Length: 208
Image 1: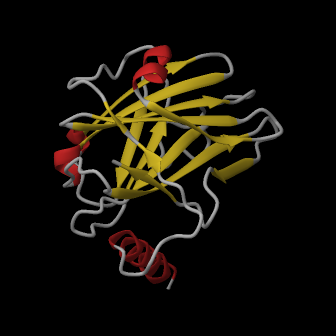
Image 2: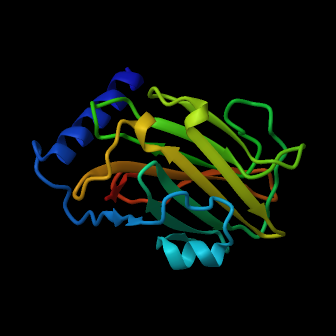
């Protein structure tokens, strides 16, 4: 039953995007900007801030915060996630969902063809000192995803490039993509929080 309800919500959201069901009240899309082809995924954060659009999506009273950077070229959709977290822990780099580690969960619903959402579980570091990701849903292949991360004492930056071709997308003005971002935060007391950065059932929109 839960799976059926979840699928129905995504179908309704897809219809809203197509204009069949009207518009989402008060939902401002996150505009993406075009960048030079072959944008360097490993560029410094100041380059991301200069070349892409940026949005402060989440700030909490205990110091947790997330800023999103967005851009695209003819081949890739670029997403940058700057996360501030006073307590970072990465105990789990082996489970499929990194439950016992701080990480991000990002779901994108490609508007072309009505595919099910693609969900990325993004871990900024692991025991081998490299970022890891798990991929679920949709038809996106692992080779269509590139990631890079920079980890500091109380913050990290995750950069992701997603193949537009694999997503079935053409950067056309007006195209909107439903987006969900969840911060998986493990506190000092071991309490796990799953924090959505968007209101209204946790969905926002990316727009070309």
